[in-house]
Image (cartoon, rainbow, N blue to C red; front, side, top):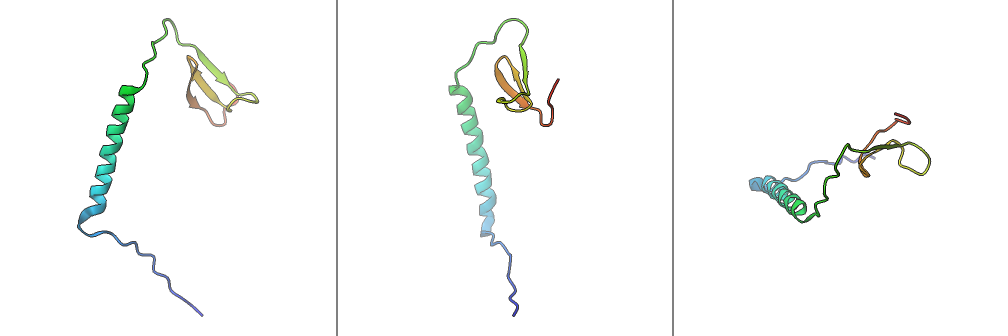
Length: 80
């Protein structure tokens, strides 16, 4: 016994999907703009930035911090 399944996705007529995607992108940009405006601005520390790297138990493996803020995770790196 065989049964053939159809895997076609129905696309709304008139480009509604493109308009929806464009609207979602615009909404995302607007939300990012407002998030940057309402986020508290931390004063920049004076002097050289402090670089910290953790690759020991209890810390995220390969975590790279600058001035106490996580800026990257270096996968597979256990020492610098």
